View (cartoon, one colour):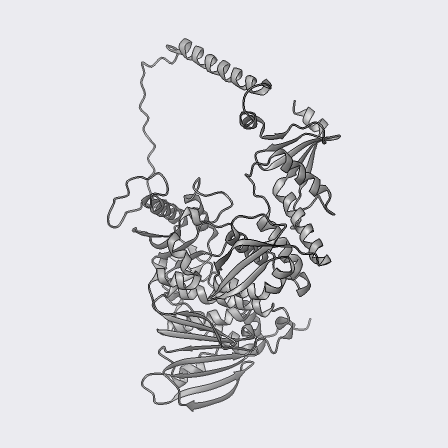
Length: 602
């Protein structure tokens, strides 16, 4: 049989590697800015054009590179960060694999100008699709200047999968912010199409958070700080009353590297248990400082996933420190957290000796001595409870409606306008039907109603706008402000009067008449988050997805008590919809439990 295995050419191998490391323009920004941080820069400036599709330029005032290093850095697995395999377990820098620059050079036209302090001239190198085009000395500042043009120019299949400019710019801003939050001592600047998007002077951690996400966040930040023998944790968490229904202000950093960690996220959320509603998400900016030997960051090309040696123990420490900070700020019942210094956290090891607990026994105890008295008390309690419940059940002429609702939920007792409606758990509407019991999810039902009403009035051009009593100014983070500018015209089509107000702020003058919402800021932020979670398949879906996002953000929430007339109007409006069975996101609205299934349970 003929030989079929061949070695891939370097250019092809680099393009394959680029597919893992460079997914979009934001990936290039991340890699180049992290290299600038590793070069001990104090000022880093990023310029992008057309959301990075045309140009990505990163300029720093770091150490720079010699002529030899400037040429060698483009080779695969060329890195100054590690010398042998053992170095992988003590990494303190951002990049270390030596994949980024070679991957970028394989799929773009790149140029590098760099000079070290001791040299009068720097080096200027141009590369296209992994081939060196020119290499010559140049007069330039100390540091490095990377330019990446025409990303994916030689892989058109990859380039066509890039999203709209506003979407790609949001990804760039998000990556930029993650690095900037981790390095408050560095000045960062971001420009798009020659307009400044972010200017972040060197500052402390709290000020950096406010500069990125808005000064309105200042009143909600609670500091956290603890040192243990296993890990040090510091940063800020948000006050419970400022928790949002959307993601966007949740950040974990390990040794100043941004990471995603759903397991630790659950620890933070659990610390807020019974303090915020189950559908709310607290803000947090949490920095872990840990021995590099106790983590593995080499498990994913983008290095945003990290494995910890003692995850369960860190989980407990994290939850405890968040609860401690909430308690210290008088936001929940508190304990005395007055221990100073480093806390020794015991961590269970494989060789730890396990001792069985000791149980104290009383040989003279007789459990039957008080049996008679106990039985009498139990029967009295049960009888009193039964009497109270049955009185409430059959009472018709006395007692308040609230007393009845405490047993049944809220019930539509009118007999002249259709079947009875009963609200169950302030979440579902129950109604008898011929085949059994119909259950309606009140929030999903309202989403369907709002969605179809929005699509109908905008299609017909009969949008009715209601002016707000007072215009409301909302400060957005830079990413959401970019999204607003993309959707500004679409907002007007569905009945919003929202205008740009400067400094990443918008002002709301009017809402669609179909929206009854008291917290306008919460509504707008919810629309943005829902819109981003849906994603955009093509331009034709923008209007539809915005309508879905508004429906989800403005629908009546779970937990809201509905009056009889409200339940009646909701069900009538639902069955007037073109598709009453599914919410706009495709989730089931109506379910029917058959009579025979109910009878089987009795």
